[in-house]
View 1 (cartoon, helix red, strand yellow):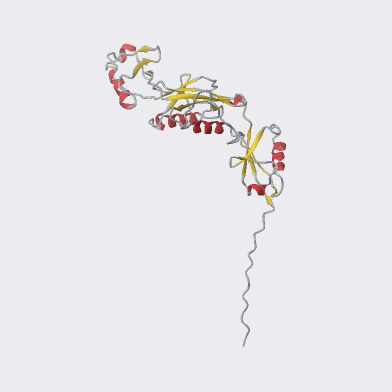
View 2: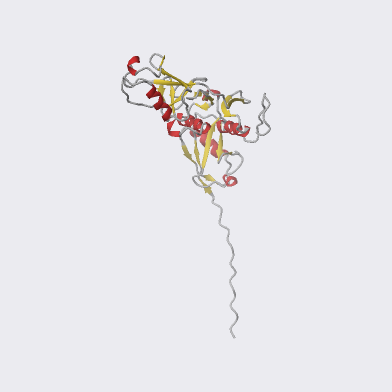
Length: 295
């Protein structure tokens, strides 16, 4: 009688930890610097590598982040489970001169104030405004500064904006009409195209000479030509917004217009987005006025 077969015991073999890893350091200038290191090396070696490769960045001028969390120089790649190609973001400490606070005035006379980076684009300002006024279709929002329509891709630095400079929200609507028609036809056309503005909510002014236009007059009475601009100036409605100013421990000021019903948390989130080097939950916000406990 043959002996019973002996079952082979399966031994679970743990995969060997990778000895080397190649993270990539990226910065705001678009650099991508790769550095292969042992997974047990201190991340201080990676930080020193970056500063050696970018001598214009002084040691300690910024922070290194992985998925939004600050890297500790004494930790290792294994501590963060870093893999080849994982990105480490370098952000410089932000100085006050890197910000600007424009004022956006919309077609209803409401003002929205927001501190932004000078490298931010008009597009980001447009997104902020449309989030504040969701009844406005995104495609209809256009902005003017110094009588020029702004390109969405332009940065605030391109516009050479300074604190308090006013950007106007507007629309460009064209209509061909007889020079003998009453201007009331043009005004009705505007109200039909912009249903959020009610008939009689504002005035129409000839941009060339700031003359007030009357509905019973004709284009010929004002010598209007093709391309002449008529500005609609709305009456200012009661405000449903409030403008808060954050002054941080470095005396940097951040101004943001908000709805009065917004949570204070959204103001805090805005600050942390503007200053990513600030550690979340390590700061407290103190108001000089009484805030709602619901925030």
